[in-house]
Length: 318
Image 1: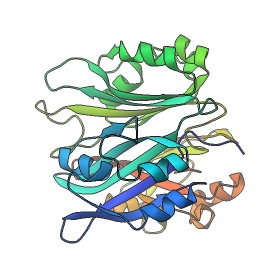
Image 2: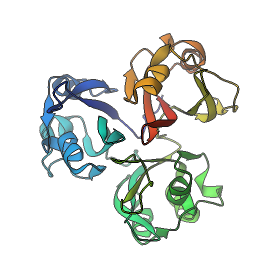
Image 3: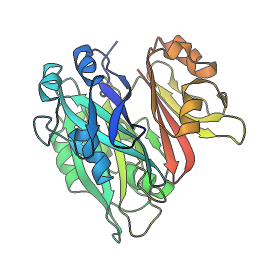
Image 4: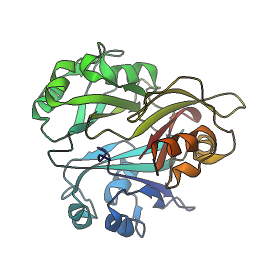
């Protein structure tokens, strides 16, 4: 089975005194030594990449883990990890967690992580930072010189809707403005989600910047092996509204429901705290069924919050 473009996901959560970020959960794939070191760590405000995202209250990308105050440089280098993005999750003004997502760099890992930003008062969303693996130099150059209006392109659609957007075939997607360049470098799938900020949530204030995080991947190194988008149903758990499996293809909409109280997705929906399960096949209902059918072992669930309200839960399977 081919590797995924995402190689590690960590969830760091505030301690009871709200003075440290402690290890909450994580998926480390084949980077076991890096995982063993990470599970023993904690971070204060401004310390390490999780602490910087906590202190600055915004997403942060490090394209070189040998700089920028990253505290696990040697361990990351030993596992071939060289890029990470920190994604803080806020419910109102309260930090729920900081999610760290790591990638590696080799010619087989074609893809990109992009952080797009709309500065308060501006009409455009521009590239704040981007990591481009493999042979995507031309695509990187184009991205650095591209701006999106609300509702245009993948970042602009997320900005307009305030919801995650998945495009399974970027090379032929009329709403993806960099389609020709994506075809040339082999990038074929795109997924982007809004980043919640302190206060009223993503894009809620004219005086706040807006951030969108986008993941672009190639056929040989998909973002994840399966991706699902779930939205809340009043009093009745979550309903799957979109999804794609690298083994099964596009997933039917509105045909799957989760329990309101059981399983990782229900837990994330109830608390607003991202989570990881390393026994995806043991999850209840359609989540576990999907993992068993595709031979998937890990599940990462990420909440999308608008202020204190849950808008969606994203599920990545590995």
